[in-house]
Each structure stands twice: as C-alpha cells, then as structure tokens.
Length: 221
Image (cartoon, rainbow, N blue to C red; front, side, top):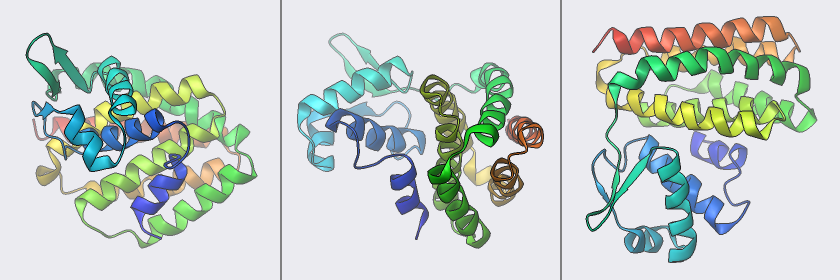
C-alpha cells in the first residue's frame, strides 16, 4: 500500500460531503505546492480536473481562504497565498504547544481502529525510502492519524491547519533539506509511544519533532 492510498484512508478521502472531499483534494495540492504560491485558482478548471461540481469546489475554496491557503481579491480573482517564511516562528510557537498535547491525548485515547491505522503506518514507515513528494505525503498522513486519535475534532482541525502551513514551508525548501527522510522516520518512536499508551514520552517526542523542524528550516534561510 503506497502513501497516497494510506493518505486517502486515514484522512477520510472518499468520505464526508462533496465539499469535504473537494477541500481535501485542493488542500493537498496547495500544501505540496502542486498549486504554486501566487498561482491563480480557477474554480471551473479545478472542478473539471477533480470531477466535482462547481458548488462543492466553491465551498471548499471558502474554507481554504479562512485557513490562509488562498486569497480572493475583488475583480482580480483567487490565488494561492505566498508562503510566508516570516510566519515560521508564529506557526512553531503554536505547534510546540499543541503537537505534544495531541500526542499525549492520542496515547490515552487511541481506540482499536486508530491503533490499526498507526500499526499500518509503522509498517509503511519502515519501508519508506521514496522521493521527496512521497515522503511529504507520508508525513502528512502520519500527522493526521495522530490528530484523529485525539478524539477531539476541534484540536484535530486546528492542528491540520497549522501542519498544512508548516508543510508548505518545508516543501518550499525541499531541494535544500537533505534530512527529509530522517525527519519523517522520527515518527516511528512517536507512533510506538502512542500505541504503548505512554503519553509523557509521546508528548516529549512530538515537541522535539516540532523543534527539529523549525531548526532545519532556519538552517537554510
């Protein structure tokens, strides 16, 4: 099973409303920079590419605008937002507080279904040695599986938003960050701590992961 398949399963691709599905599809393109910063967003073209009607796509775009992934200008159109490196400190400040919280809660609350997803991801992680784009997708999938295991939809939604913004920054410097594989493989001990129910260890590993991410980015800017 490849990372895109797992991503679809753990993030709920194919479930929810059409607007939810459109949101996830467009969001992934924006986060991984398949839609480049500053690129115009044409709802009709995207709807045709994704096989959705224009109404769910427009609903998805409204949500993405609230999450600062796109911006709409009167009489000019809608565009993917620029990646703001200056926001790295603010994003990391939030994630240093919330990622450990999520990891600890996941360790306490993960149910049988969550554990099955995490176990499958551990197996995939052990075999992961693909290209940058594949590793980025796997990284996103791992984070979302942890957020889902918190059983707190508000925390989950908040962390997905900030992880999206952080991942956009990572993707911008992907060709200058040789440690991507190591960064993604750091999730192994974190997933095991969650599955073992060790909330304290999981929280500490999550905090270290966020700090390592920020340090890696700052080393190349």
